[in-house]
Length: 307
Image (cartoon, rainbow, N blue to C red; front, side, top):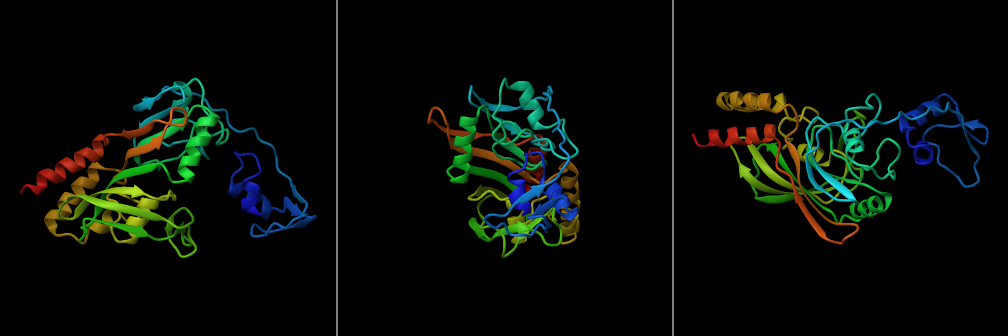
């Protein structure tokens, strides 16, 4: 029931809000209160009572954008770490969407009132390439390419530990963690998820890998790398910070602590996107340089490796 109604009620009403309405008895089926787990049956009469609240009005903000590509139909930016992609509970300003509204004359509205132009997302603390659509026709084409997995997405990730092989894949289903609903984990009931990786550089206790996503699950790279005991360096959510330092010798502990002080996030960057332009059919192959914090960590690792 909660999934069904979330997909049909106005886009600013979240699944959590629907669940609260269910618990309060404000959603009734054939005049009977039901639980979130109620399975919808043909012919049922569903009545929902809720106070209509206007979604927040979004305003453009003059936030600097690192534009990798732009034309009349779409815009691709190199998102910095720390920038939230779209407004949500508790934040209606200071997001990429606010920056896009300021910069672009028009954006698609296919993804709801709070997500104009947004076709896909990156985590707040993941940097790199992100596509936004300027009209619904372009949005629909890009969304179709994502769902058909014809868009190629490559990331650079710095992970703990070393790999015996130069490449590999992680094929494991991902779903919400039953212990912490804000986190995701490899779980049998999860959705099929496939991540391929290739080693780019080996350091004494860290490895730089290029990752290709074959599916697009929330936190996929972070979850998969943690699953194979190679959490992303700096990731506070999936065991990529201090818990790994204790496994190192004293010299490397000091180096790791110094590196973590330089990078207050997971070392993950959306480096490359390959897709077909929805209007020109041109094959777009875009790349984004890494941001200073990630670059500086790699520079220090390389200099230390020379000794």
